[in-house]
Image 1 (tube, rainbow, N blue to C red):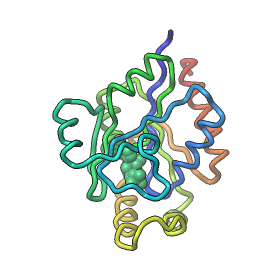
Image 2: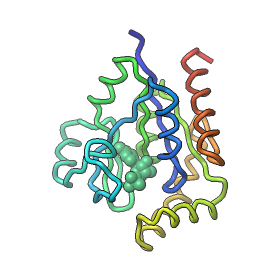
Image 3: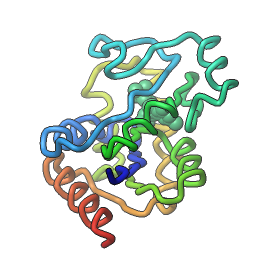
Length: 188
Ligand code: 5GP
């Protein structure tokens, strides 16, 4: 069985990564999304074990100390990490595994797994990003401001990613990502 592809999939808060991801999962049965651990509080739409594993800071630290994360990073006061064993198991089974992670973690994975595919999702404009972030109504004003500031910083990392995909429309963006994946799997 051929190993699957590891995909670093990054885009700032509010860019629409989740919506594109749903399209990808709908269109390609070989794609799996890695479920991360986080210390952030669950949002109403979150499902334990599906969107995240919600853990305490102590639990997170213990996993990090046991080298249980492929990467981990701090993002706006919380920790997020990719469980290594689960990802490698899915890759061995031949699945293409997407890591929906921020830029610090993305850089760690590009360094540790140079054969990964890295994709950066960009918003049509910063104004549009702010509109989307406010529109989803899940964060308070302080968090929105923090996430927008962070977005400006994150955009500087776009150049380290092999591919940039504009989210002007989630279906179109998903199709573009699927053609990137196909091309990479066929050795371009
Ligand atoms: P949110 O709190 O909106 O779910 O996620 C905040 C940010 O953390 C997003 O950019 C998301 O992609 C990123 N993130 C989610 N899981 C991980 C992870 O395991 N590692 C890293 N480095 N970032 C993550």
